[in-house]
Length: 109
Length: 117
Image (cartoon, rainbow over all chains, first blue to last red):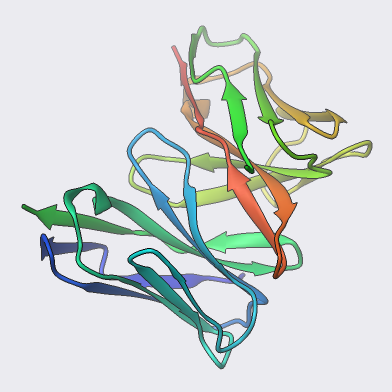
């Protein structure tokens, strides 16, 4: 089946720093979505990407849909304490989403 | 916009009983909703796709008689865990499909924590 690779499992950064997260796959996806999940909550959509090569921003977040359609990255600039959480990438194909394992981001004040 | 609610947020039940979880799209209509299961420190695993007015489609390994899904209206899907056992304890999250400017996406509910004693 389709699998998405997100690594590392955890990232630790200093407040104010930028951070980049990658998501790769052996399969092609038509859509790439990035979600943030806080403990005990459902995932919240951050950015949706629909075209290969597309670069989209949402405030301090920027994400790109890889040209090969097999990868995507998410950048967070000038991190703040509330950026703490688990970031999931999700690839969409045939109206279904496949999720990566998530990256837990910690931000030191 | 694109708000999805779930009820209840958490439930504790005895082994052998059935539990119903509701998923509602509050400000849009969703012909398709999805049910996921998430174990601690793990990713979301798709259980089934709920289609309004038709039978749900279950992922491999998910028992349809165990996890009953009903999508009776364009804003409501329900998941019933029948004869629940402790191994069914998990975090159940629903999502509703919506269409944005570029394509489709899924908006998630806040999840339901199920504990079976």
